[in-house]
Image (cartoon, rainbow, N blue to C red; front, side):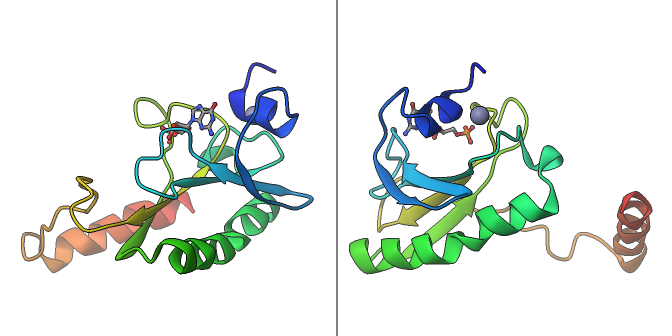
Length: 136
Ligand code: 5GP
Ligand code: ZN
């Protein structure tokens, strides 16, 4: 399997591991976008959230609070973002992973949603709900 994260799991390429259990691995992101930038992955090779089964999701997301608290205690960031990219061009490694990104004053990162508050009426919100519910 030509997957860089599977190779990390198999110790075929080195990584800075911070947590491991039977189903999940957490290790430092090589780019260290901010100090402590960490990735959490399931050991099972799953491409992205669309291929993630609920059992694996429970396992991998279940580790998030533990790592987040450790990063907070260690680095005392002003905040922490949890990010997951799915599909090109956002996603660059096609083995599901959750980014934990501690945030610091003036860290240069821009990571917040747009604010379109007040631009849409009730009908618009209700039509979105109807469309999404049909796909559940
Ligand atoms: P994506 O863009 O798919 O959400 O994020 C992939 C992440 O994997 C990037 O932040 C990138 O720095 C990280 N990454 C890519 N290759 C390696 C590697 O070999 N080792 C580690 N530790 N991180 C990697
Ligand atoms: Zn993989």
